[in-house]
Length: 114
Ligand SMILES: [Zn+2]
Image 1 (cartoon, rainbow, N blue to C red):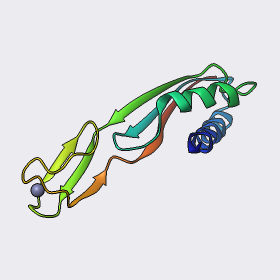
Image 2 (cartoon, protein in one colour):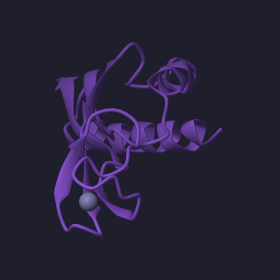
Image 3 (cartoon, rainbow, N blue to C red):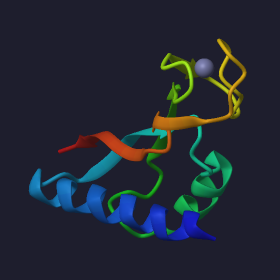
């Protein structure tokens, strides 16, 4: 259920920027999601369609941009990139790895009509 809270945050940020820009309509939102984030695009889209109704964001398109995760192996010291689910270190098969990035979820930009 935490997608609902996250989607509400996105809406609030977008509305805030739209009001500052004196926009009539928000048309597009660009979101970055780390590959290891548990957030489901479909859930965000589902809540978005509901909560953006009757706001400046109604009908705006969400663009999801999945970004690869970066991991650091604590046994062999190598960094590696993940584009899918979590795996052991490809260099030494260690599971003592630290997530450097890949769990983020952020609104990177919005497009508005003024
Ligand atoms: Zn390793």
